[in-house]
View 1 (cartoon, helix red, strand yellow):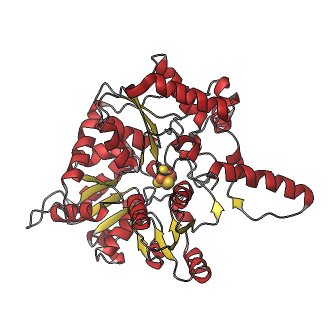
View 2 (cartoon, rainbow, N blue to C red):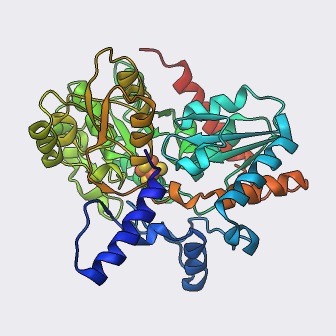
View 3 (tube, rainbow, N blue to C red):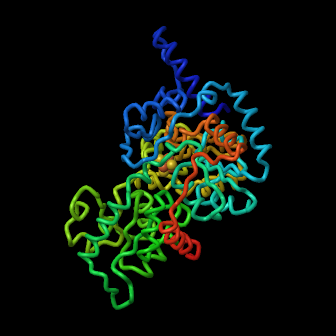
Length: 437
Ligand code: SF4
C-alpha cells in the first residue's frame, strides 16, 4: 500500500489532469495543498505574521497567537531529493548511535516513521524514551504537547527536540492556562472550596494528555490529574472518589464518551464555553453537574459521522467498526467498539479470523495497520484522505536538519518546560500512573 503522502501526490496530479481533460478521478483529499512541502507554510506564516495549522484536518481551526512557529528550514533540505534525505538521515543516525533516539507517533507519516526507533502513542513514546538513558537527544516526531511531556519525564540533561515547531495540536490549543484559570475562579466562587461530608472537594480538574504542560501543571497544583484515552475511565473514577464533580479539558468528546459509559447522565455534563460567563451555563446547571466539559475537540476525529458507519455496514456486512473516543458521541454509539490507538491495534492484532475493519482514527495509522495485517480488510471510515495537519508538518527534511545539527553538537528546536511548570505537571502525571481501576 502506498503511503498517505504518495496517495496525496497522486490525487493532486490526477485532479490537475482531470481539470484539463474534464475526466473526474476516484480518490480525494481534503486539501491539494497537502502535496506541497510544509516549508511553504512556515514561509506563509512568517509573511502573514500569524500562525496556522496548515492544510489537513485542522486547517479551519484558528491557531492562537502563542502557537510556536517554525523558522525557515535551510534551503538544502527543501531542495534535497527523497533519496538524498534518506542517505543523510541514515548517516546522521549512524553517527549519533545511542546518543539519539527517534520517536514516531502512530499518526506520523510513513516517510518519517521509517526512521523511528519506537512507534506508539504519546505516553508510550514518552516512556519508551526512558528505556534509552544513554540518549542525549530525544527527537519526537509527534506534536508539541508530546515533546513537552517527554521533557517533563526525561532527565534534565536530555534534549527533547521537535523537528518542526509548528507541529502543534489544534485540540490542545483550545484550552489555555488563562482561560482555564478564569474558569476555575468562577467555579470556586460558585461552589466554594470546602469538602462535603464525605471529604470530597467541589471539583477536580482532569486534563487529557493532549494539553499543554501548563495545564498539566495546573492539575498538579489543584489536586487534579492527567488522563490518556486508554485510562480515562480509571482516572474519572479516581477523580469521583475525591471530588463531587470533574472539570474535564480540553476534549469534550473523550470526556463525554467516557463519563456516559460510566453512567453519568448527559444532562449532568454541561459544556464550558470559555468565551461566555459561567461557560454559557446557569448556576443551577453547574451545581447539578458531575462532569463539566471544556469546549474542545479534535478536527481529525470530528470528521467521522454516523453516515460513514451506515455506508460501511451496507457495503461490508459483518464489518467491525472501531472508533477512537475523540469521535463525537453518536459515532461512538453507532460503532461496535471505541478505544485508544492501542485498543484499536490490539483489537486488530487479536482477530484470529480474516475480518473487515472500518476504523475511525487518523489515516496514517489506519493505512499502516492495513499494511501490517494483510489477512484483514482494513480501511478508514472517512473516504477523504485528510491527515492530522499538524503532525503532517514534520517531513524527512526537518528530521535530517535536526539530526545533522546534533551531529555538529547543536540541539535545534529544543522543547524545554520550565521547572516551576514541570514539577506540578509531573505530580499530575504521577497521580495518573498511580491510579488503578
Ligand atoms: S489527531 Fe487531533 S488530537 Fe491528535 S495531534 Fe492531531 S489535532 Fe491533536
